[in-house]
Image: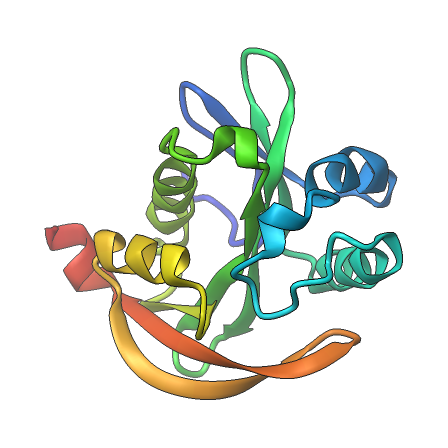
Length: 179
């Protein structure tokens, strides 16, 4: 059966579910995002503020590739991630804008989420890029564990937020599937 390409295809494994973000999800996602510790290493550290998170949330909806990350057993919202900037010409897409509540840190949530997303999207693209805030050491380590290669620094324009310097990482389909 041929799967139709979508950057908001529902995905799941035995523990987690990625469900397309809806405009009605603001409060449940903000309940996770309002902890300042979540944003300590992110480029825009004040996303815990309701008005700033509202702008972030609007950008997530506009991307048409954002997900809620849920615990399958309880339905609890653990965080969010998204696909964005699909480029058919060079067969690439980005994964990012990922955050999780602190109570799930160190529980292996991010590697499971990234594996679901990469397993799915590499049926449609040849390369996946990631933007990581230059000061976000936790996310840089996560990228290296995934096998992503550091491609250098670049300035990123965020929806309704100041531009920030990020590190661009990349994983090629052939490298991912061989690993």
